[in-house]
Structure formats: C-alpha cells, structure tokens
Length: 108
Image (cartoon, rainbow, N blue to C red; front, top):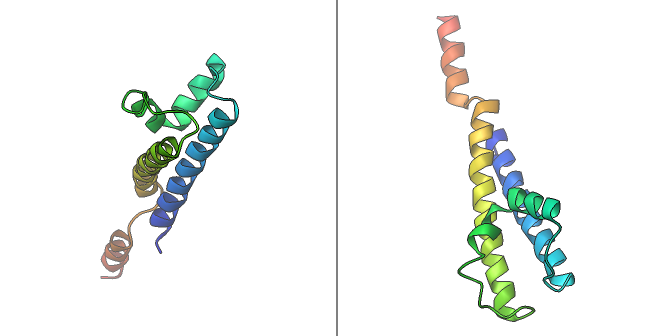
C-alpha cells in the first residue's frame, strides 16, 4: 500500500475514533451541555457531529436508533478525514509515476 493511501486510511481511523470518543463522552454525561471550549474542540475534531445536530435532533437519547445515527456520523467523519488525509498525503509524498518520470529524464 502506498504511503499516502496508508496515511489516508489512518486519518479515517482517527476520524472514526474521535467520533466514537465524542459519542462515548456525550452518552456517559447524559447529554449534558458541553463546556464551551470542549464544544469548540469537539466541533473541530468531529465536523460530522455538526451536520447531525439537525436531522437527528428528535431521536431519543440512549436508544438503538441513536447508536445507528452516531455510527452514520462516524462513517461520515471518517470520510471527511480520509479526504483530508488523501489531500495532505498528495502533498507529502509524490506518486510513483512522477518519481519514475524524473528518474527516466535524468538517465536519458
């Protein structure tokens, strides 16, 4: 697996884990309001939770449907992190084709 794809995969995993951590915290705190600084940090680390605030507003807390909604948000957050990981990885590592073309142009 190329480095940038591996990086993107690990970024997606980080996105899902950050969403799961936020869900666990919110679930254990009985959906109490977050500290403002903690809320800003949660919005930055888990942007999908902002998108889920309105469509999932009427779902009962501590229900199976809420777990399904947060799982969907986790997958959406993973997709966002995967896209960011691909973008950052494309800047960090050149593709193999570019390296081969540079090598061929230097030799010939």
